[in-house]
Image (cartoon, rainbow, N blue to C red; front, top):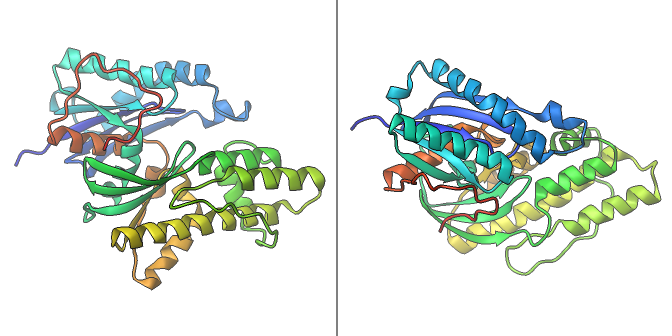
Length: 330
C-alpha cells in the first residue's frame, strides 16, 4: 500500500504551524511559530494582530516544514487545513494559503476540524490507539466529552454550559495578576500551594460541565481579600475543576462501557489534571494523552485528522471557507 503524505496547515488562533505527516501517524516535521510573546503584553490574543502575523509567517513556516521533512511539494498527496473553529481572520489565512497551494500544485484539499485534530493528536503519540474510545477535550474554547465511534464518527455526550475550562484558567490567572497565558502559570503556582480553600460546587444534570461559578467565586474571594494566598487559590481551583473532569469522565466511560479514556486539547498538558487521570490506571482504566507539544495547537494533529478524512473520501473544493463556530462532525 502506497504511503500517503499529508501537509497540514494550522492557523486557528495564535500559532502558525505547518507539518508533514506520513500515513496519519508518523510526523516527518511539525514547525510551530508561536505568537505568545506578541500577545502577552495585551493580556490575550488580539485577532487582528494574530491574522497579520499569520500572513507574515506562513510561507516561511511551510518552507521550513518541507525542508525538515526532506521532501518537496511534489511528494505531497493531500493538503489538510484547519477551517474551524477559531478566529475567523486567522483561519482565513491558513484556508486561503491551502487553497492556493491546492490549485497551484493540483493536489487534493481536505478542510479539517480543529477539535478533531486535537483528538487525532493521540494517534500520533499512541500508534496502537484505535476507535472506539472516550475522549475528554479540554482547551481554551472547548470542554467536551466525546464518544469516538470511528475515525470520522463522533458523538458529543457532555459539554460545558458556559465557560470552557481553558477560559476559566485564563480568567483566574488574570484576576490574581499572573498574566497571559493563564493555564501554565496557574499550573506552576499551584505546585507551591495546597487545596485548602473551599469553593462552591455547581451541580449539573447528566455529563455537562459549568465553570463560571467557580471562576466568579475565586474573583470574589480575591476582591474581598487581596492578600489571600494565591498559590493555595490556584491549587484549590485546580483540584475543584479536576474533580469534576474526572467524575464526569468516569460516568461517561461507565455509560459507554469502555475503559479507554483519552485526553486532548491544550489544558490536557496541565500536570495536576494529567496525574489525576493517570491515577485511574490503578482502577483498570487505560489513559492516553498526547505529548505536550501535541496538546497545544499544531499542524501535525491537523495532518493526522486530515489524513483520516482524506482516506474516507472527504475532499474539499476551492469554495472552502473559514467557519469560526464549526462543530464536531458527527
